Length: 72
Image (tube, rainbow, N blue to C red; front, side, top):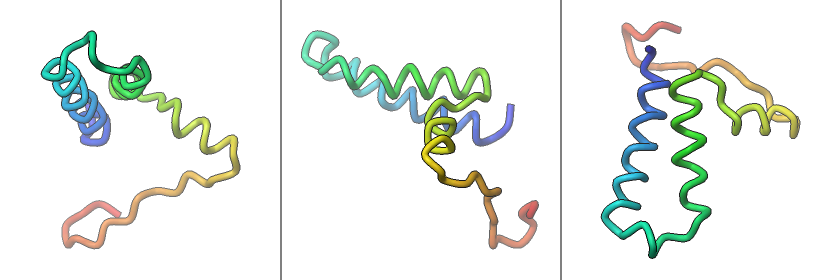
């Protein structure tokens, strides 16, 4: 598992924790969508949001890291 997929899972976990602490019955149903989609992207490596943005015409370019020792 690479760091980007782990980041997606961590963000999903933080949002899910917020839902848990707020109460499942008090949270709007739309707040569950990012948790499900980020978990799906973290496990499978297929990001539905990235797929949708590519269809809208945005280009998927590799990330450039300016930190020494970072793999460019």
